[in-house]
Length: 623
Image (cartoon, rainbow, N blue to C red; front, top):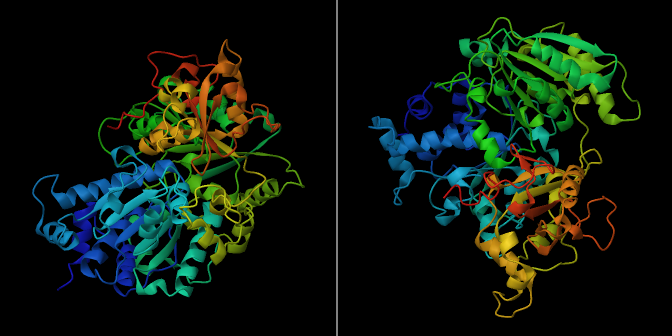
C-alpha cells in the first residue's frame, strides 16, 4: 500500500503545513525510530506530535504503536491537548462537512474493520475517563492525562478505578503504546519511572507483544538521558515562522526589591501601569497568597486568575472566558477589549497556548522562568513586548531553592535585556541546569515492586506494596502534601445509618464498604475536584467547623487506594498535629456536603456560606 503524502495529510488534519522538525520526526517514526528525548522550544507546535503519530500509524500500522498516551502535569494543558485531538477526530469523521480525499483515505486506513478511525479519552468534559480507549484495544486511541491519572494506572493503582479494571488499564497503557511525556523537566521522578518500566519490559522480553515506547518532550530538558536529543535543524531556522518565534522581541527588565514582603504590592502597581494601554498582561507568582493579593488590586471585570487550586469546572469555564480568549490570538471569535490581566501560579507556566503582550512576575528558578517567557509574545508578532522580573536583593544561603533563584538572576542579567528563546539557548547549558529547581528524592523501583503492585485482587494492605504517589512525583521537603476537595449531595443523604443498612456483599454493618461501592459506581470526575496544600485545606475547614453544627457535618475521606472513611468534620485533623484519634487529610480526598459551603469562584473558601444558587455538587453536569 502506497503511503499517504505526509505534508498533505498533516495540512488536512491541522490546517497548516508542517514545520521542518515535524517532517523530520515523521521520517524517524517511519524508520521505526522513536526518539527518547525531543528538545523543542515553546510555540512551535509540540502538541502536533499527535498528528505526526496518527499519519505514521495510517502508513505503517505494524510498526507504529496503536495508542498514544499524552501526559503533562498541568490540567489546563490536558484540556488544550484534548481540544486539538477533538478537532482532528472531527475532521476524520467529517463533522465539519465534506472531507478532502486524503482525510477519507486516512480515516479508512485508521478505522480498519472497526470503522472507527480514532477514540479519545481524557480528564476533560464528556471524554473524562470514558474508557473508550480500553473498550476496543484494536482502535487507535489518544489518552490525555496528568501524571497521577496515567502513572497510577500504569502501576495497577488507578485512582477511582475498580480492582477488576486496574490490570486492564495497566496492560492497555503499557503495551502497544507511545507515551509522550510533555514538559518532562517538571516531573523527573515520573520520567525515571517510565524509563524503568520500559527497561523492565525489555528485560522480560515483552517486545514480542506491542512495545511500550517513551518519548520525553520538553523545551527545558534536564539532560538526564544519554540519548542524543531530537531537536530543531538547519531547515527549521531557515523557516520564516520558526525564525520569528525563536527571535521574538521580549525586552527584559530586572527589578530589585528592598522588601520582598511588598512583592505583591509592587507587582500589582507595575501591572496597573498598563491599565489604559489596551494590553494583554500576564502576571506570574510562585505563591497562591500573592496571586490573591494581586488579583484584589486589579480591575475585577478584566482580571482572571489561573492556579492549581482552582476547581476543574471553573478551570474549564475560565478558558472560554472573553478575558482568557484575549491571550489566544489564533482562537478567533469574541474577546475582551482594553487591558486584560491573567494572574497565574505555575499552573499557567507550562504548555498553555497563550500569548501575552507584556509580563510582570517574581523571580523563579531558570526552568520556570524559561516557561514563563514562552507565554510572552509567543508568536513573534509584537515589537514592543516587555517583561519585568522582581527579585530580592539577598538570598538565603542555607536554602537550595533560594540559591537556584540567585543563579537564575545571574543568567537573566547576562541576557542584557533580550529574553527571546534564541538568547536563552545561547546561555551556558551547565549554568542553566545548575539554576533549575532542585530535584526531589527519586525512589528506586524494582521487579519486586512491580509484582506487588500488580496483585490487584489483594485489596487490603499488603507488606512490601507501598502507595504509588511518591514514586510518581518523588519526595521533596519543599512540596507540601496536597488535599483534594469535592462536594457531593450523597455525603449528607447517605448517613452512616443508611450506609450500614446496605452492603454490596449482602452483609449489613459496614458503612465504609458501602461508601466505596457508591464511589466505584459513580466515581469522582476531574471537573468536581480542586486540590490545595493540606495546610490551606486545614485553615479553610477550621472556618467551616467553627460555624454552629460545623463539627457534626458528615464527610467522607478517600485515601489514594480508594478506601473511604465515613466520619464528621470533627473527626478530621485540622491542626496538623496528626493526633492519633484524628483522620488525616494529607494526600487524601475530602468529600463535603453542599450544606458545608466553602466554595467561592472555584476556590476553597471557608468563609463562603452555603448558597442555594451556588454550584457545589456538579457531578452530573457533563451528562
